[in-house]
Image (cartoon, rainbow, N blue to C red; front, side, top):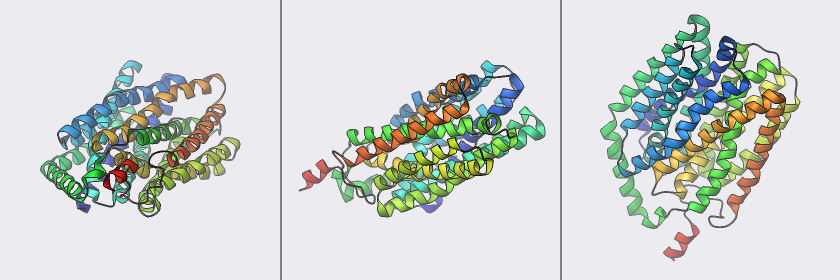
Amino acid sequence: MNSRRHSYLITLGHVCTDINQGALPAMLPFLIVAYDLSYTLAAVIMLANSVVSAIIQPLFGFLGDKVDRPWFMSLGILLAACGVSAMGFFSSYTLIVVCALVTGVGVALFHPEGGKLANVVAGEKKGTGVSNFSVGGNLGIGIGPIIATFAIVTWGMQGTIVFMIPAIFAAVVLLTQNKAFRRLTVIENERILEADAVQRTDDWVGFSKLTAVNICRSIVGNAFMVFIPLYWMGVLGQSQELGALMLTVYSLGGAVAAFFGGRIADRFGFKRMIILSTALLAPLILLFVLTSSVVVATILVMFCGLALSFAFAPMVVMGQLYLPNRLGFASGVSLGVVVSVGGIAAPGIGRIGDIWSLSVSMAVVCAIAFLAFGISLSLLTGRNAHDGIGVREVPESANEKKS
């Protein structure tokens, strides 16, 4: 069953949630200037946001697998916006960190249930459905810096209150569809069970390999989100506003890739897309580290966003295919925990920048990207060694049982 309307509504919710995720790193240069923060302290703000998501997001996913809770999405959107909006009203570093924690809780609430429902309403075209969902995240992260920069420049730090407007709208719209989402989940579960119950075998080994690749990818992605504005200021000598704009260039490039990534993977295979994406990413980052041209750096940032996001939807779908009995948990890990791990690593990368330089920090990020490519090749060995074209991929042990 494919409910296009509900797919778009979930995507809208993802946009309005991740607007706040995108705004947070864009606010860092303003906070650094206003309160004389070091790179490390700035990264700790992101760390606070990420740690809470890493801890509680699997729990919310687990709870969503036991009993459907579509209203988690609405509550998550509101909390995410409350954290970012309130951050503009405090000058205390401690309270700013608390606001980042609140935003992290909101994001943790939304993503497991949103990712699960994106899979449910997609029917058989899982890659396409999750691509639509991931585009919402990329658009939100891309729009967030624009809104944050405009609001802060125009009205000062308290201008962040504007983030409550889209949050309230999206939360109310999704809440009105609560019963419909529950009904669609029941229908999809019945369809899968009738088609082939053996397909619901969980493959934890394959899921672990995929998660390792995704963690490396997340560290790279978070490093770009945190340090691109700072890199534009500290290394390339550009303004705060231009640094924030680069986040939008990076994220919108990712949105284009996310839109096509799942659709291409539906046809040619999810694992192939993951390996191709990681193979392209590391050389692009290496070129970015070596260039001193603002124009070339801008082009490379856009292509890095493309390479990272081509694999996003395939990774989420593969995680759900590995754990078909735990869609919420798989979504919570793929959409939340691995992203949070990337945020947890940000202060370490920031510390490297404080001691040596941001150029050295980005060189470390490049090395992690090469590691992601190496681990991605392990997806082609052992159980589930086949490439996995389309959504009908099942573990080899399941095929043996059928025969």
